[in-house]
Image 1: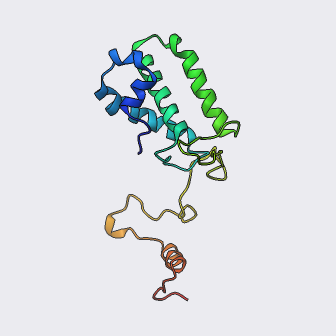
Image 2: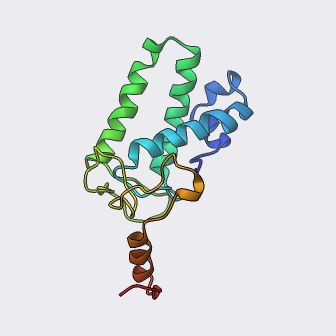
Image 3: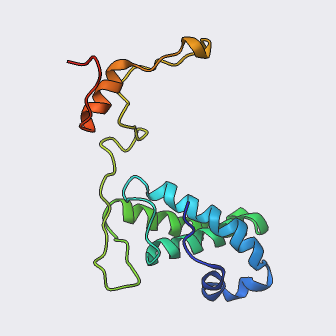
Length: 163
């Protein structure tokens, strides 16, 4: 998982917090956790991981890291406005009302659905094959031969015994 932002950027954005939290806490706990949260929230509309020059992902990460710190050290009610702003930003990005911006002059990136039914879990290329592994002894388990044949054909390989 990528970490969007760094300690200097976090303290640069929120200088008053530098006396209440250590650089180690920011780099090892808050930023990685916040980056993961941003990825989870935006995965339905954007390709992950985000590039290193994605200013929007970095700003959202800093905001989430601050919110996480505030929720742990201040009463939750004091953080409701920050939480509301953060969730509104996420919603605006996913609905196309806002776009991801880069540090460079690259064009803004708008959300595009990453799979057909965002309410469901993403699935792999083998989703339509029945599960062949079970609680049986390992020696009794097998791989679906139709799946192997389809995989080899997709790669342009010839399968022994296939028609």
